[in-house]
Amino acid sequence: MRLNELITRSALRVLFAIAAVLPFTQSEADSPLGVYGKWSSYCGTDEIPQNPATIPQVGCFYLSVDHAVKGTFSSHVVEVSVGETGTESFTVDGTVIVDIEETASRTNLPYVLAGGSAGYLICEGPSHRDTGCPVNIMVFARNPDRSVLFSVVECIPPGYHLCATTQANWDYERSRAH
Image (cartoon, rainbow, N blue to C red; front, side, top):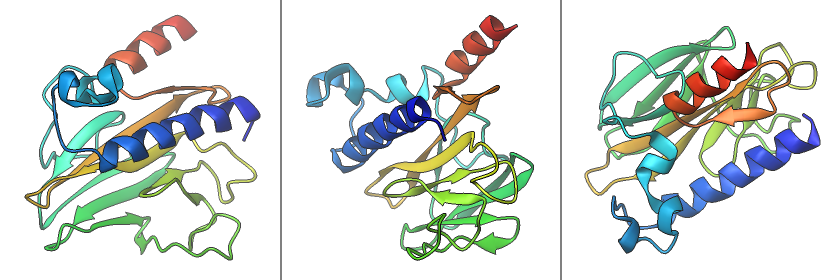
């Protein structure tokens, strides 16, 4: 990964990590982060889908207890689920992702990178060293009812230097690229 991509992703991870430990609130007045504490800053202004049929390409979605959803990212089938205790699980190409500190990717799959405190980067090829990792799927918040709010951040080719957190940002940046 290039330096500016690492900086962008690192900044997003820090903001998401801070937001994940703050009380679940929609009011920017209630958040010590101000505008950065608003869900719309990360999830957009449309209603956040709950238990969607597929994982959105970019943006946020809720999963309730005992629900799972799949999507395809960088040619990999990704499944995200929430168990009865409210614990999330990530499966890529049929393999449950396990964090393994001793590996280069810090997971049991070379094309899935540990992406912060609760999430993963999905890379294009067989090794994250050979290709870009344009997608980051992470936990944004855990709710009192044990549902989980996830965020999908997708970076725009070529180079994956610019990442979008909402569909509106994605559409805007894609229109500028052509």
